[in-house]
Image 1: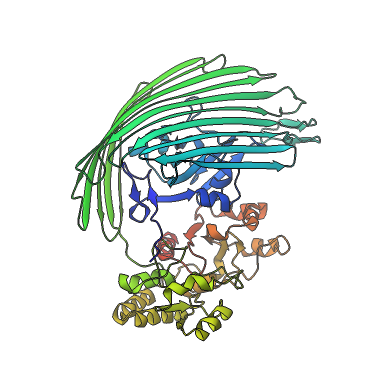
Image 2: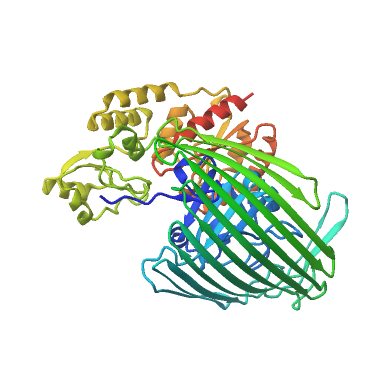
Length: 628
């Protein structure tokens, strides 16, 4: 039986943990996700993550800031290979020009994480891991990528990596060049501010060229219960920039970054004690040439030690305590603005964790920080997760109702093996699974959506497969309940299925606001009535959306302005994100958002293509409480 790998999260707790057990909201992206998004830079990937907004001042290499859940950019900690890289002078990390070619995985941890990561993590953490070679199956692997584009754009990268008898290595280099575009228009613009002063801009234009070179080397030795690693990386970047209202072809900035890290560990999560220690240094030199020439240099030294005490390592409940100590010293020098600044910080943190086999979790952590510039502080955090309900999708329902030995096949949309066949998006019903992939399950009962797979269904019947046709894209509550009962009967668990249906029937919460005053939007625009997952949701909530698709060709501003809704329900489904979502920034909609300042829009998560999860019910309960 083929089983999908579980997803491990490294940033949510002091030790790695399975994503199903985390109480924090976290998105994990790997190289497969980078390829699916056709990304060149890290910012290209991050802009697709829920809760993340990316602001960029121009073309490639220009200042690119990340805003997590509306927090300031400097309130998100950025960690690359365990090294914090937020600059001391402004606090916010510049993602401009950071390429994806050497990145192995990215974690975006949303919400306050100061107890574990310090004061810079009030909004969350972006945890980036570069390629290491540790998980390679062969001692020698080579990757080469070349790219050409408009504006004389050229990209090239190469990676050599491998693993053998505990030793691993990764050598990487990449180069990026482009003539760029101009962020300043040739046309003159002027406007009057609220204070009455007139501002003029434009009137000059020149290309903003960009080039960046990166190189890194990682060497390590890992035996599973002890290991050591050394990392060295360097980058050099030059960006030509536009001035405010003049032709400034000589304006450009050059940045050079260097990172060195030495770390090791002794013990693992299956032993009583595990020790970890790291020392790192991050140097950043920036020079701006032109009318406002300036220079700055920043050196960050960091040393930390972590002790994990793992008790109750086996059984239904596992518990652990981690002690973390950290020392950081940063020196910043510049010929302008902050001439010289030295900051030191000593901190100690303690975290207690409890996990169960049912993916319930509880943790409590506290941190004491002794800062040379600010007052000493104590921060704390309590988090927990209790899995109350299954997600309302056929594959998750099957996991809820079936015994483990009843499940054989799998779906790439789930983290566990399934008896359910892979399902497809509604706009791709013609693509069918390969028949050869089903041959190992010839002795199993196969659950199949006959509407989506008519040819495959006919072929399986001809071959004598045991086949059960299911409507796994329910469009009404009754169809959803029928699916639950049918799965309960197939798995000989009718009683549990009936209780689940009864519970869901009782969870419909009436809204206090009249339906006519509720505007429903999704990331693809207005609610599109032909999408089955939206139909099911709206029926269960008893809502009627405005029957108008939000598209460039059919955008009824008059209808929106006349509606003046008092309540906004915003459905977010990153899997369905497309360019129509940009229409949500239209000035007409912005006026509506402003009028809703007393009752802000409510965002409900939509995780799956066909149906919605328990988070919808929690969101509706929240909206019910907030509605005046």
